[in-house]
Length: 171
Image 1 (tube, rainbow, N blue to C red):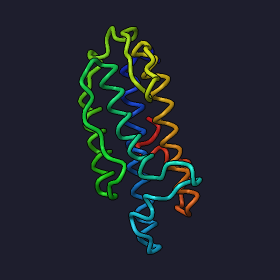
Image 2: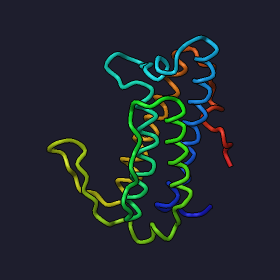
Image 3: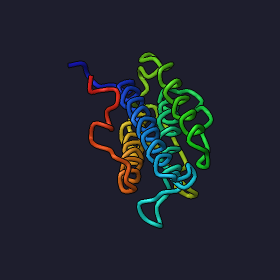
């Protein structure tokens, strides 16, 4: 088994983005069959005080490429907005996959300990090594928001199972 390195997370994030695209397609098909508008579906939430489905999709698309870019020492690409239609979210997720596909292992070489500072919210701008931002902060957030996409859709009757989290397979 090959050792994990920062570039390993590019594949993980690409798979997460692919799963989000798959879930979005299944959700959109279910909504259309049930006579539910795209905007209504994208506004679904698990709880009133949680962000809606569209926001969850935005985070998966944006964090996957933004944090990979930062860890590689690149300028992060522009993100997508939280108020798109299904086609807009799919295009944003596709753009994230394309960006990730263009990254190389060499861009991450020697970057594990490079300090990165990022303002998470006003007054909170921690500095951590690139490896910690990517493997802890980004990975946790991307997987959380992907799980929320699944949970929101499932809670609203979209027929999903565990296999839907692995649309490209396990290999």
